[in-house]
Image 1 (cartoon, rainbow, N blue to C red):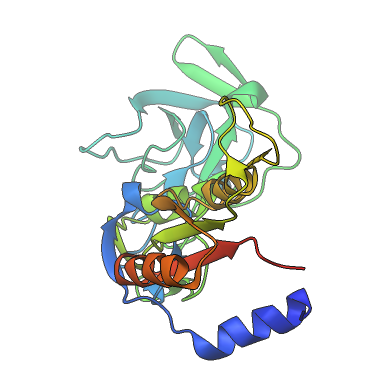
Image 2: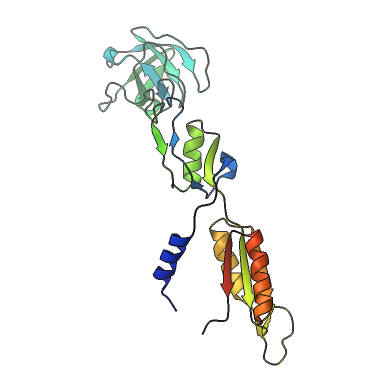
Length: 246
């Protein structure tokens, strides 16, 4: 019998990766990337507010400003800001032309169409996401070999990726050996035991997002086992053989 580490080395030495496939991002969860992914666009593509508040011109300082408009996320028609003015702005909205800073709404006082604020921590560019601050066009986003976790999928979707090249999940056959094995729920005759290995192996595979699993049983003869193995090899990428070890 060999150790687990030796077994892993042998598997790595004598197997090759499955041919990559293109999958829509929604279907790529828990897959491994087969190629690097690069940003196709600057994200964000415009200067963007990261807070609900008021867009201002930083050099206006703490003077009272005139409220002249409002910009929400998804706004297509931009507004322009002049010295001495402020524009109500919401998280995700594009910054008005002429504005360079956003004051959080919690730091402001509104009186009719005038606002004033007191924020000692405010600096030029506060609460503004600059163009390409998340990723630049052509910049490496994820590398070949990376696992597509839920967080990774959200990140790729957020930078405009709709499909990825990944390694497909393997088809797996679990071959059970032992004439004494019976399925749970059936009566046992003398000398018989309930089969349990396929349950643990199937669950372990499912945990790795491998769901295409075939469970086969081979009788304890060379001819029967050979026939089952041959059939399994024709229809699956991986074979797990359990039983017959002492």
